[in-house]
Image 1 (spheres, rainbow, N blue to C red):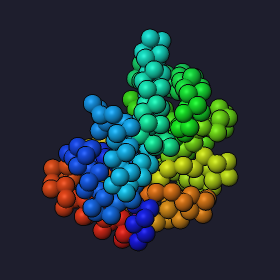
Image 2: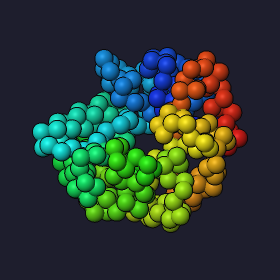
Image 3: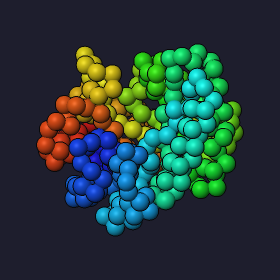
Image 4: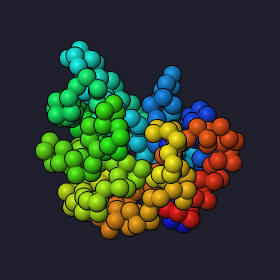
Length: 272
């Protein structure tokens, strides 16, 4: 993808940089959009952060990440709903149209019940999302995370959830790291386009061997994901948004982040 006008980066990708540094460095490198992780906003005014993003010529693509609805006790579930409502308000103040959701899982909650917790949690926060004009982007996670991070593991499940809830404030985020293996992926991306849920596209690569489930993602072109093919599917489905680079990697966080951002730019142009 040579069109850098659709290049976005998540602040977690360059984790060693604080938000102010990331905004400045991304703008200097020609990044067009920024997805802000909630950790990067800690101690900051979201309105001021949004103003700084716009002043740098960037677009706030999303706030990442809400969700985490399942829990064994109702008090914790209620607290997480309040946390998500706070994040919805933060996204609105930031000027981000999406709040990306990792829906959650808990090893002490059976998967069917956990999925009920996800749906009821979403239904509880949807009125505020609609009021604030923030869409809730359900991001299915790879099945290896089903025990402790998310019980929504395929794009079909995410689409089914959106249709079942039936709110225009619901949508999906397609992260190639989590869904590249799915034999139904092309059909479910097309479905997301038809029903209007396709709202975000995240890219990185799947290394083999994978040294850590969470913090060993590859730079685009380093692994086995056919990113251009999946990009073709999302574009055929009508998606015209950003391709967001979301890489968690201890290896890359340990290197000079300016050099790393240069590698990201090159990989984006050659492999997305």
